[in-house]
Image (cartoon, rainbow over all chains, first blue to last red; front, side):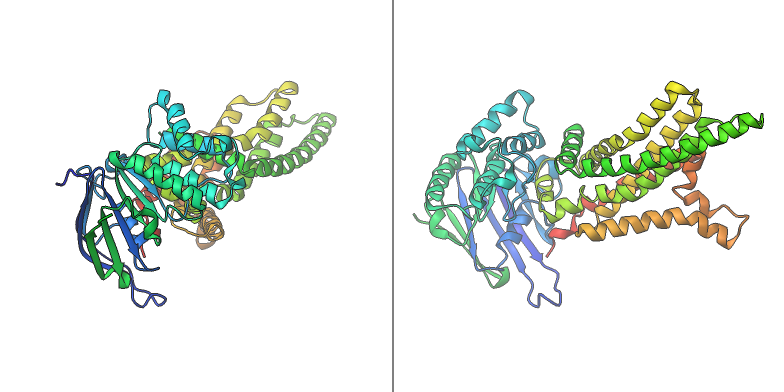
Length: 228
Length: 252
């Protein structure tokens, strides 16, 4: 089971309490498995800990207990080795405003150590997937919010990761783009394990196999199978 | 990977226009100082010719103070450029891109260090140009010239690694700039503080960044100075790597 695409075992995390946060995010003994071809949707109100949970899954936050394995590799112990299987779209986009979309995606392909002879092809494929070909040479700072979101998505799927973590992926997308994005995720789904954090469950309902609903800062949660 | 990261860092500094502004500033300041030193050199040379005194050495009279000014200039400029390595990336959330990619922390730190170092080397173009122009008309002390360049490179590396170390701890660019400048100033003033306590004691001076550069600028290659700069670079970069491995700014 540990060699499943995403294996989460007895995950516990307690955020540091401060004067501003009286009731910090707290998660206890969270376990789940997302296999290749499955999609888990994280839902919950603002501040319920969806992004924090995704950050833990991506290895950006170290949990107090438990472990997160990507393809059998513990992300907090074998960081770089496990992260080769990871594609992350964070809520705050990781874009360089001064670079063009093409330059940015080329850089991301190098970060993921895609062989040099495949880099051009990979970038072109990502541009095509997100329908960004006509904007390829445009500097990122000149793009609208929706286009930037599409560049962020292109960055996350560029290396065809085994585990795809998407935080509010439809933020800033118009209905037509949301529809296109759903089709793209449906195309990617058979080859990847997805975790999507969203406020708009109906937008990803058709993809959902499991739903993790966080309540009251993560202290309570429900994990159940979805029926579409 | 280190090369890719270094290339990207250098590219970002050029694309943001930071290097152009700093280069223009350096060129303006160094050209003015060079003009002032050259005028003084020619006045002194003419006087020594008239008085049949020993001729003034142009390397000592012009290039030595010019290199000293360059060191001082780098001292102020480096914290401004080093901020973009981690603090700026953290503020604009782009650091997440590296931390979620399959890259070891040491590659990231070394890549960023080399990229910023390469970009800063362009700032040496004005003094390189001035040395070249002087070499066309005068005989320069090549030993002193080489030692001075070596000293400047080492000083630049040490200052940059210190500023990167500070940048790896801060979230606010302004705070990081101020803090790294304070740390650099503190390390440089150690020599002066030591002399204040005991004029005969140079114990504190051995920790000073500027003290170790003086020998190089005078044309003296000392293994003690070389080891000092290398140790500063290694320890500061190791500190940055440790900080990055336990990136605290995602913790809530």
